[in-house]
Length: 379
Ligand SMILES: *Cc1c(COP(=O)(O)O)cnc(C)c1O
Image (cartoon, rainbow, N blue to C red; front, side, top):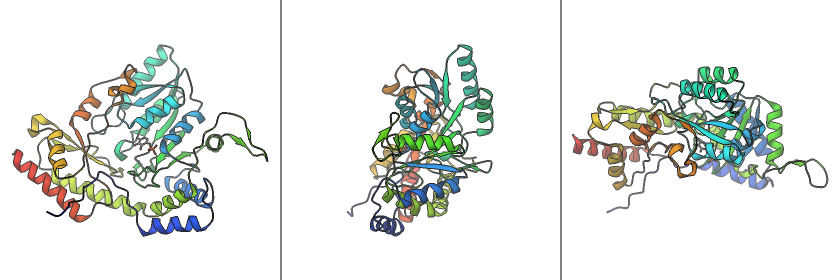
């Protein structure tokens, strides 16, 4: 039997353009955590997202951390975080010395339930608790409902750090993900919309905020012949070589977005006739289609998301449950949370399907065949 390569959720999609960029950066002599590729990458991302200032960093988590610190978040403060997210969002709150408070999601999108968030803010203020910031996350590439969220945060005078790690290229009412908060964050990890193999970006409309973060990202070093430091800093800068990879990826963003959208449309068609199966955030016109997540109502379908997952696993096709909610993580046992049950249901019913731009037509056909086999067996 021929060896069948496994199919992954979202494998890096790199080729000759990225290879040429690495060579260019290496040959330029700037094998450094600063340099012309970093400067150009910052400018190009800022232009694409529609913000004036950007800071390249070595991870999205570092960008979240510095975003929180630059907004003055620290010990003794609560930070409101969606319970449906990747752990990096909540870890950044811990890194800043603050305490995450988890808020449940809108079942249609997996994004924070903005109405519930409003209740939490009102209740915490009534109880005299200190809230340092709110961190909306653009889950799976679908923007949060920003009009009411920003109105709420403006009213309560709360800083917003937007976690757009999954949402480069997404839009909400004509504006780009990453441009909504006091600070916005992108990730260029291996499985994101574009990759530098590891990296991130902090975005802002506020020059001072980015300047403060830039200072901390470089060990809080003051320009002086000797090494002088005026506060606690970090080594968070992005390699100039990796910034070159990021520029090559960014130049391909429209192509990558079109490809993810085609994969999403394929899944939408494939599951349209299946009773009880929905594509998460299917009505969002601005999504970048980063990962396609289906939800399975077992009472209507007669099977569970996990049944399809194990069928596909036998065919070497990777799937994953939707993010396990933070309030269910051992790390956050005992953390405060405001829950409706929506996140728990999304975790029980959601399944993330292979969505990467490096999937070829044969692999998509293989996934389709296996899903159809499974559905035939179940009907
Ligand atoms: C990937 C991701 C991050 C963190 O990005 P890294 O670059 O891996 O540090 C943060 N938040 C969310 C929601 C993510 O998906």
